[in-house]
Picture 1 (tube, one colour):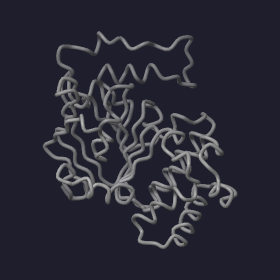
Picture 2 (cartoon, one colour):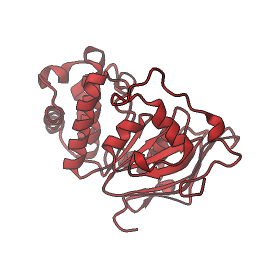
Picture 3 (cartoon, rainbow, N blue to C red):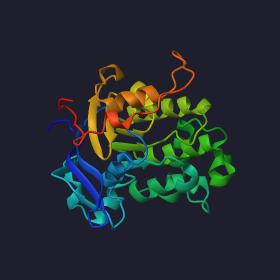
Length: 283
């Protein structure tokens, strides 16, 4: 298909000799747009992202009819070939910088690592590129932050550092896995706006993974709703939601425009028939 950066068809991920299927027949495409995958914890959305990146543990059994990125069959790539893609043409922004950044290395060295590994730069040039990127993510006093260690910066600043490191190489595809979940509400909007600005200016595509369906709807061009490892609905607007699970996610999110005394709890009996409908199937 033309203009498709990522093509996923019938992706399956199983653990424990296939007894636990975390992803079940997931299919979607991603072009020059922003696509969000939403669902509760355990729905399989993060597993999809890690399967694309080739970062699942050896115990995972991954199959797909098609898992292509920019013309490459990701399932045919060796680990060495995947290492050349990760951080270069494929980037993954993790949800909590406290666990994603190396605690014993200064910030500047960690951000510069991308330029050293994939940009064929000298250490001096890589350091300058890292400093310039930290300025782009609106970090003040860049020289001090470059010398600092992860425990010496705030969560919001740490997430900006992660974004800087992952976008330094202007990747073709950015996968952001819960990029704001560890942040205070006051800085979430700033980080999302920054991510949007950088992805757009770099000409990258974005796959945003989150449990916050309203945030994804306001940020992404399309919304894929996952439940028990399957995509149950593909939307462009929340008003299109028809699947009862999607509606339950929307109802369970607080809405300042329509305050309620108590949020609704999903009634699983209403959307757990013997066969969970796939996107496009009649309910």
